[in-house]
Every structure is written in C-alpha cells, then in structure tokens.
Image 1 (tube, rainbow, N blue to C red):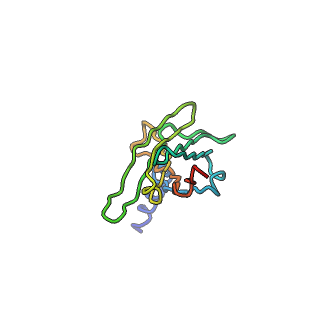
Image 2: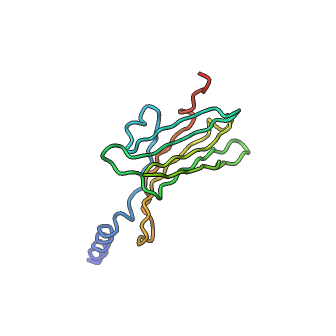
Image 3: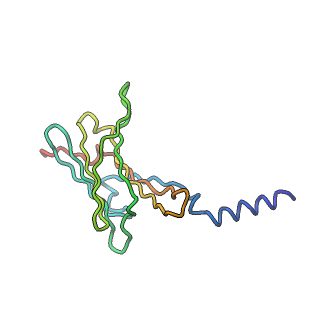
Length: 148
C-alpha cells in the first residue's frame, strides 16, 4: 500500500517536468542523409595552405523554426596514442536565424575530427536547460580533396 503514493508522486513529477527530464538524442549527419535533417545544413571545405578550412551553415528549412540562438557548435579531435583530445577554436556568426561556424583542421587531425551542432533551448526561468539534440558530423566524410 505504501507504493501507491510514491508511484503517484513520480507520475506527477514526470508529467509536470517532462521537458526537463527529456532524453538527449544524437543524430549522425553524413553526406548521404544531410538533406533529411530538420535543419538545412551546408558544409563547405577549402584548402588554406596545408590545412582545411570548414564552414558549417545551419538555418531553417521552409516551414520550420530556425535554430535557437543558444545553439552551439564544437569541434573535437579524438585522442590518438599519447596525444590528448583537442578542441580547435570555432568561430561562430549568427545573423537572421542563420548560424555559421568556421574552423581549421590539419590533414593529420581530419580522420579523428567531429563537428557537433547542439541545439539546447535555454529559458531564463528554467533552472536546468533541456538536454537538447546533437547533430554529429564525421568531418573526414565531408572533406574531399579540394584539388579534385
């Protein structure tokens, strides 16, 4: 009999604060499925000397909302042997609902690099932001030889 009040309390908590307890979803973005995503993603790569410069543009698709202003983009180069993981700098420009992320990678880092776009809506009255969703790009899949 003691379980009923506890079960009821958990059910009320979940109903009232469901968005706060929402699950975090990761979406893998590839050249083959990039057009199927809820945002319009564009990935451009160009050679700048020996490095590759990436530009990732995120904007709304027709009839959909633009990415939230609190969205972020991050590059992580995975650890290799004794070399620690790296976080190359990412420059972000936001204008009229369009977010543009630019960064550079060396050829040796390319195979281990991932770009992650995270849309985490943040509201001033919410003590803990929604975990949001991640869109993860394996950058080696988008980097073709610019001389081709």
